[in-house]
Length: 408
Image (cartoon, rainbow, N blue to C red; front, side, top):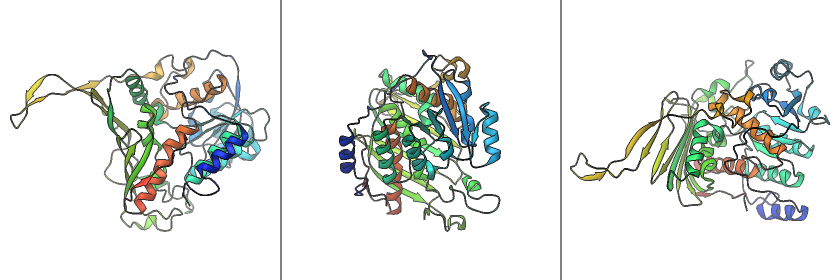
């Protein structure tokens, strides 16, 4: 099902389609840092999804009017209306998309719906901001890419790790050359206890029941790709499960609670990503970047960030050998959300490490400035597809597999 050479959605066929339409997309502007708005234009937005969608502060953005909201449940529609001070609500995305006043839609629906909802939104002539991941299959990755190409509308994935305060710092360090060469990196997304969300109060299963960890990889892969722009080209994936009956009968046929992926990048570097749902693990989304001049490490929850600098000082090690002594230093992490990187009303902390206000601002700025958002379709698929292939590898005992490149 996830074969990237599927006839309908192969890269070769896709290139033929896009060549025929004459459309093209630019790679996203890395390190965009949208900054203070310079336009007074208003973008009329629809917000869909009354749980996660409550946390993106569209009502605070000076260039936004929340025109309407939508959720299948009345209580969640009411919550959206209250949060965004909006008096128009629709019972479904399909109805909202018929509203001619709406120019852009924030889609915060269940992960298995993302591909269909994004394609519907783009084909309705609206720009789309969508929660992660972009898709759960390689076929759907190609399908979204085709829709972006054919409609010319903007698509942005709302990946939080890209806009965490530590990642913004890492981007700036990388741009300034402080790392030297980043030769390896790693990231972890630990969310133990997720099985509490597997079932509704009436006992019916939610979309999260048995979700393979590596089908939700973007909180991990973004830490590298957002900073260096590298692409993950090959992977060996491994999974761990304990035969818990809770996993039985899940729609993904997934046996794993935890998955680890060992990636090779297009620069020949290594990246290790872990997504874990069970174990004695601290809840975290954290990355580390290791360079030949400097390394930068996020801490676990409530732990400090630190750097390590290659030093010229020579010391005796425990074996009596004279070696270079690297210097480990605590790092005073900036709060970028308090700076003019955001409109004044949005300069406050927000969900997922201060990222939510940045996501909203970047999406709206890309529309007003008529440019690609930082996490555009190419970046989104570069974050998403490696996890899909990593899970395929884990199901085959760690088989070494190639990852499709959507930039070509």
